[in-house]
Image (tube, rainbow, N blue to C red; front, side, top):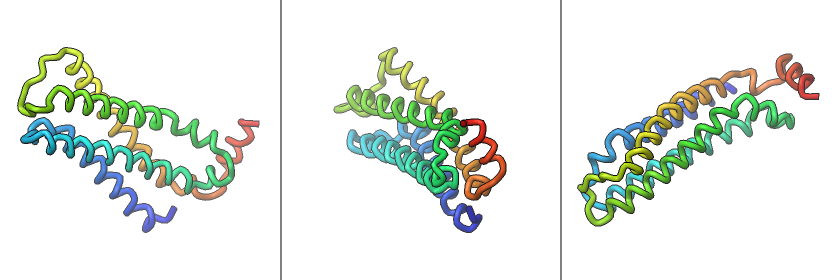
Length: 160
């Protein structure tokens, strides 16, 4: 992919990661009202969905995908795909449970150990999500994915 075409996409991906990081870090401090917290959680989940959509659009744009060698692409990026979906599931679960517990009193402290466990798992999952998502975004900028090359032919020969 041309650098001039890929850089805006990369900046959008970084913006979505930054928004997610910011909301993970500061959403507990910005809980003035129930509706504000709900909107912040919805924004965070929508940003994760947009990030996934962008990654899959980049997958669809590769030569490998267009040539019908989807299994090569999936095998190269199976861990990031798995991490993204696990992180999204953890985030939605945390947001739903948190809103259920905090609705009516957004400043309350939650003493539920199950919620704290889910909170820690979501934050640890966020670290893996940031790492794998950023690495995938940078790897998809490699021009080898957008043109026919010898390594694609070798991978195809391995699959037969």
